[in-house]
Length: 275
Image (cartoon, rainbow, N blue to C red; front, side, top):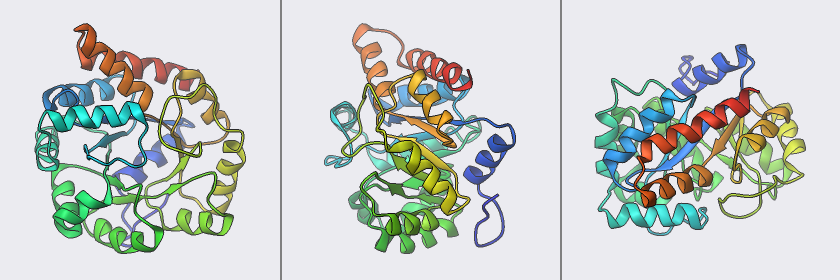
């Protein structure tokens, strides 16, 4: 088990350790807060938990989401149009503290984080019940400062590795990342893809050989088959974003419950991952 500098395992670390003992791969769905509104997000979070999610990644809408493809960009635009703010997202999470029992990782960008201040943001996120942070445009050289602040509030700062990351830098990122390392499966932005990159399997093995931090694969997993492939490659977790966000948007367009659609899709992923 990976421990923090205080010697106490965080919520994310404890969850991955429990899954490792059960020989299970973590399912981590991503959704955008406030799409179509925060009430729907609240219901969707609980539906994901009820249908097999082990952790959840929750995006805070931002006007210039550099790492996101068109599906998640559109979701962020809808959330911003609905008036969603980071403060409101944290208020919604606070209201779920007694109901949401699985670790939640906030996905945000450097600008909103700096706008509020690293220390105040981490304190507020932890108070709201978040377990970790992903900041995709944060350079490794800046990550150590934020990681120290986040850790002081019991949050894990999760760092990303891409197929284009040089091997030496990959090892540094993996050593600095807390909770798990987020392995981007493709070069480019998020999005649904029909096949995962051929380089993913050796990258998973390379990271796992470099240190004990769990490795979760994201960007491009569109369904149960790809999630199962990630597990077979030895990854500790599968992150599914655009495919779920699209399913929720389609449900909204058709008048179906967004939460029900999220739960159904999550259950399908869970069944595929465990098959």
